Amino acid sequence: MNFEHFIAKRISFQSKRSFSKMIVRIAITGIALGVAVMILSLAVIRGFKSTIQQKLSNFAGDIQITKLQLANNPENSFIYQSDSLSAAIKSNPNIGHYNEFATKVGVLRLGSQMDPIVLKGLGEHFHQEFYQSLLTDGRLFKQANEIIISKELANRFQLKLNTSLYIYFADQQLKIRKLKVVGFYDSGIAQLDRMYIIADISIIKNVNNWENHEIGGYEIFTKPSVNTANIIDSLNGELPFDAYAQSTEALYPAMFEWLALLDVNGSVIIILMLLVAGINMISALLIIILERSTTIGLLKTLGANNFSIQRIFLINAAYLIFYGLIIGNSIALLVSFIQDKTHLLKLDQSNYYMSYVPIELSLSDIIYLNAGAMIACMIMVIIPSFLITKISAIKSIRFN
Image 1 (spheres, rainbow, N blue to C red):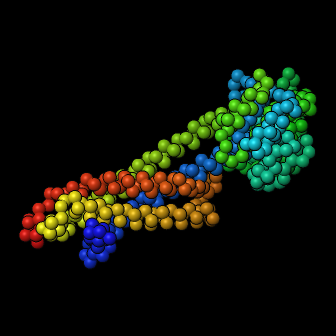
Image 2 (tube, rainbow, N blue to C red):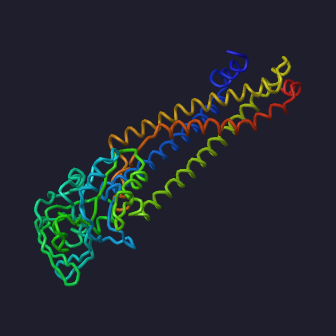
Image 3 (cartoon, rainbow, N blue to C red):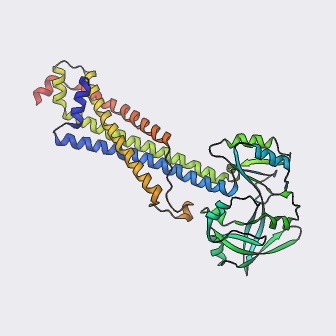
């Protein structure tokens, strides 16, 4: 251990002065809380975005292949269920699963109450596990005249299980279908719940007079951590001129633009926390330097130059920041673990699309935050360390 490290360690942790100990504890606490808040903020933002994106992807697929339309119409025209297209989808190693689907705009009527809805028909290979996880009561549809309806619509129409209702479809002539409610679902996303009724695709084929090989499109579910843009380009090269593939982001642009704003909130929190931690360290180092003015004067008398003494106090600051980072990371990891296992912190699902605060830690986020906090705080404390050059050895010793 060299001279500067030896003195810095004694100043930081072996001081017998109660005031110095209190300043050291305040500095470490400030760094710890700042780092913990930054890590938890990013973990919550990442968890929130990931949960919403996963819900949308499970509901609509990561990619959809549909008929080319001039507008983002919730009702799709048919495309042909060709063997060559199915083979192209199956042969792509980045695609994990796909399913045929179709949508049809209609009006739900029960007595005098009416609401516009979108009936979504699913093919036989749909994600049963996902829709099963959404059910709050009842079961999934098994027959062509059975549907599952959102809990929000059920409450609005005061529906009970096994109730029959009428859905009106306006084509060249009005078509009415009597359907049986066998389950209630709750996706947590109000925009979906107030609009979609889920059923077998055969209902829509029957209403539209489609042939067996005619479908609304494909929902494609990619494997984790793959570039959907490359898959979309590859699929569009295989599609006929009147069909196209698009991502979930293109289907729900408003939702994803809103999620992108969360990154701005995270950046603001990080900047504020870094400023608070940096100012806290500047204040602590100034107080420690002023309190140790006699020591500084004595070291100068013994031949130490300003740069060497500056290094002592910068090393001292590095010790405090390092221990603050360790404590802050420990707090963040502990809180994250407890929340992930217990879901202790709850949310109003009608406003936040989920019933608890989601946590998703990222090792890269933790590394970058710790490195950024250390570098930012060390840069800030360089400025007050120049106060050492203004302290006169003779005056500081004579004053004391």
